[in-house]
Image 1: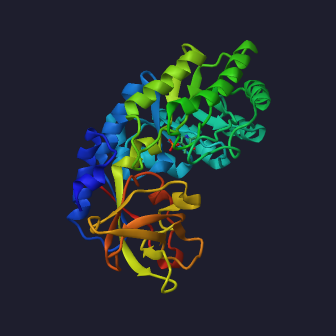
Image 2: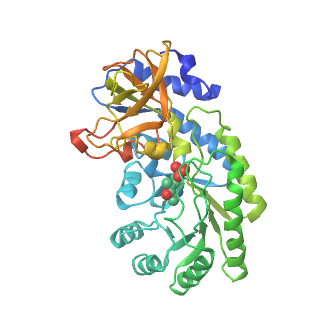
Image 3: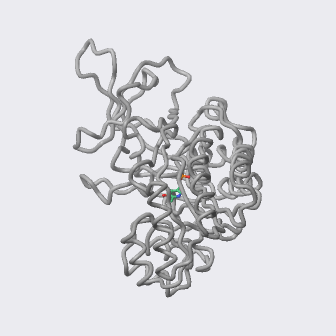
Amino acid sequence: MTMNANVAGLTARNCEFVSRTLSYIASNRFDRPTLVVDAEAVAAKYHALARGLGRARIHYAVKANPAPGILQRLVAEGANFDAASRAEIDMCLAAGAQPEQISFGNTIKRPTDIAYAHRLGITHFAADAAEELDKLAEHAPGASVYLRMLVDNTEADWPLSRKFGSSAEMVLKLMDQARDAGLVVAGLSFHVGSQTRAPQMWAGTLDQVAAVWHQARAAGHDLQLLNIGGGFPASYGAEMLPAEDYARAVMALVTERFGEVPQIMAEPGRGLVAEAGAIAAEVLLVSRKDADDLHRWAYLDIGMFSGLAETMGEAIRYRITTERDHEPTGPCILAGPSCDSADVLYERIPYQLPLGLKAGDRVVIHSCGAYTSTYASVGFNGFPPLDVVVI
Ligand SMILES: *Cc1c(COP(=O)(O)O)cnc(C)c1O
């Protein structure tokens, strides 16, 4: 495959890392779909985000990609971690993180996991409900809690609205409850929505959160911590603002609304790891349903249940390259290999793929470092979970 086709739209700095991943893929054979992630690229992205975020601390959202090689590298670079479960906490510890570097950011926690985290010395927990505060008061007495706000985030490509957070009025009540239960009311958190493509898209969400922040302070809560969550985007082919500039622009919007907050934390997941990875996959079948079908169907050895869950609703459109990209192309519906008819990746907007594409061809799926390996089922139809190699 030619480099020029593969790096279109990426910055010069990214090219260097993209080429490391792609040359690894080009020089290896894989007997199943394999995600190759470049730890150097993750480290570079970490530092770019850190420069842009200034004094905000980075807590990597572990769920995006918990490969030991990535966690170890981030520990070495000085990152902190946002874990959602006991298992994620253990992965961070195994990679060398200290309990002080880990926050427990899931608002839906198992009581025994809370007690485990508390025993380890983890001090910061998220909550968005009265019952969760009861659990924290019982199993992590005296812990610091940040309350997650429900925000409208319709501008993100992968919104996280509705399921998480509580309303402004509810958050203020929960702060009183937490204080009365002996917890430390540290501050507020929110998530602007994953893959929020432009910094200006944060403004409306930040306005909503700032209003509650100021009300809470007026009501006597001495808030110290603002957790701005994730949402930092990755490039899936389109030209994006470099990570450092994006993060700096978000911080300017934060400062405008919140002034000098004592502690700020950010929880990038996708923005840190997505571009650092690519998947080597294979075409299993190319067919037409009828002789005069305008579209071909291309079935890959990876699908919705083996790593490409974010193709759901065609929300994330990965860039896909083949070894025939110099050949003429035509529209293709892309589907996974499993026996579930929901396992169609892209149909509404078909992909232009080489007319000569055939079974056995390698395809490379780009910017796949986030939300792929963790979304792979354990063996639907016997297809193994996505293999991960960190280079
Ligand atoms: C998933 C998640 C993140 C990471 O979001 P990205 O959009 O991948 O950066 C951060 N914080 C919380 C609480 C999350 O659930």
